[in-house]
Image 1 (cartoon, rainbow over the protein chains, first blue to last red):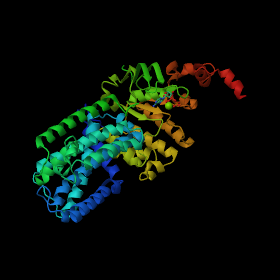
Image 2: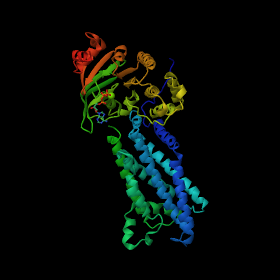
Image 3: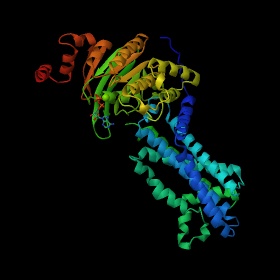
Length: 266
Length: 249
Ligand SMILES: Nc1ncnc2c1ncn2[C@@H]1O[C@H](COP(=O)(O)OP(=O)(O)OP(=O)(O)O)[C@@H](O)[C@H]1O
Ligand SMILES: [Mg+2]
């Protein structure tokens, strides 16, 4: 039998082909379920934009000096970025474990860093695709404004990574599909709703204000809002420091979980 | 010469508390065709999982061609191909995707990967099934995909955990021939199976494991001397050959 010569890279520092394969593979998997992955959030965002931004918004003079549609759009965008990142990470990690094909990565010369970065790259791909679609929809309603593109990119990326890492940890921990959704139902959805998607903090009764200041979503939403319309109720530096701190802690945590093989190796 | 595989005093205790491997030591010389036998639950798959990184090691050490499989795991993984007992694949993916992703994980570039995949698909007669999802394949075809996947990186050490379970007579014979070829071309093979005939035909050295420990080890000839491999196997695993024969009569 004549045989093809297979050349394995000598002494890999970074297994680039392996890293790209993790990303490419996950995107191929996502494209198998385009309705669930992309269309669903776009349609839901369209409804939010239409009802809250357009129908209700036309009855509201201005909020914080801005048209209501412009005001809610960053909130809607942020909710969808958070959801896309979290769902992507949990399902990617959990499906691999559930179907056992995580073993394919374990028997290959892939480092933990490559596995984590590969997963996060797919997370960022999904959340950016989701965000981009929503921006296009919002543009149709004439509600898109971005005053600072670098700041906008910062928030989209940092929030995607934070919830991607959180999702990875949940994906490693979960023993069944029910547990995958726990954090989303009890934590992410409620906190994002009270984090200032639809309203300013000044609209809250005084005894509820703590709900905003102690809520990480308040900083994420306001950060993104500031990058888009220049309006911010949260102190910007505090939001940035807080987010980067989350990012560092979560990265270290997920790194540790991979290193000990938590949920991965028997 | 550095052995292809050296397992020293391996112990594996699962989180559930099950002691699956209990002080197992094993050496497979380069170029060997090694039979790794034992009853259900003896710890064969667990040992293999420890070698390949699917399971963590509780204590002991493993070296693949002198490379520490824990400390320098990436270096060690490159040398090994595994065909696992259970299908650990994305069942919605096609044979080509499954093999291609594994090749990518091993860092093989696209042009080489494509040639190698074409070669393997041809070799395992999968060319008529390239577009079917794995779950729609018959049991034997699934087994072939798994074997093709194990060979994508041209491993120096090929580990086969019950590769012929559920495979028809023709493919089994074909596979035996192919494994023989691979071995002649220099691939070291570790084979786990419950078909003693397979071991008689293919293996040069044999180890029998029971309750997580090696209970007998040596060249095949030693096992064949006397009452044959079956008697030697039953004797080593603690079942009494005479008693079994009497019960069956
Ligand atoms: N993931 C796991 N978690 C807990 N216990 C396990 C796990 N996998 C295997 N075991 C236990 O470890 C022991 C050894 O199992 P193993 O699969 O290694 O046996 P084996 O020799 O491969 O058997 P078989 O011939 O049936 O494949 C058994 O008692 C089994 O129940
Ligand atoms: Mg087994």
